[in-house]
Image 1 (cartoon, rainbow, N blue to C red):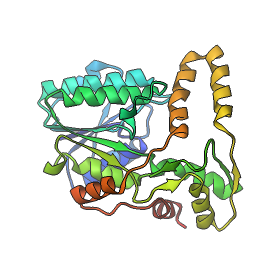
Image 2 (image 1 turned 90 degrees about the vertical axis):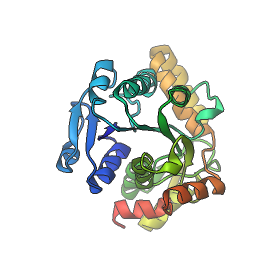
Image 3 (image 1 turned 60 degrees about the vertical axis):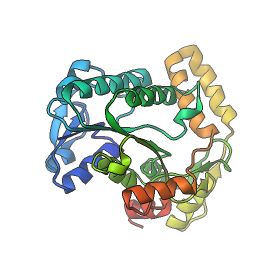
Length: 294
């Protein structure tokens, strides 16, 4: 039995889909308020719980052989401390008690760089270290940005031709196909070459951020109107938020870290990934064209 946390999210849904296509038993950990109809239709066992409750995590792990942790913090799930850190620590502890054979943990590229102003990075780095010391078999995946996050931006571009690009347009990234990441996550437990390994996960090309609106322009056959405010604008918003809502100010620290720094994989890292999992990583443009039906 596979337990997938964050199963109703962009990545989690795809992981469940991949496992069920292979007719593997899956328990999908979801919130009561989430949309999980597709997971149910695919034959997943639905576990409704709260990742902030240790008791729910312990119950979900009963009878489980493999865990794939895809959940992450947002406004509806909770803070990075509660969701990205505490929930994963509780998951690891419960896995040890339940005799789980393998955990796949989805972290983030650059987690080991010491970004003190990014709560999500700090939380995931602490979880990585805890997992490696746990004695459990594991695979840690460090993806760059998800291609699925570009879909709502592409739809907005389709309607308006406008692309908002905050910060330096020359910063490089290697956005990964969310489907490729799901395939890797789903197969990591059964791949002996992935055991106790850490993988940087990105797309096959390193792009400057200025190339994203160009890709949108090619897909929709229109010239992009790029609005490019400096990071100072975000800094101003964070300063104001700090006076009104210190927690919201902290959450923007992760966003600023993502906007201010480069997150891309080297050719050697991509070659290792493709060799280990036997796949050809998909380009951003190919991914977007598939989902946008263009």
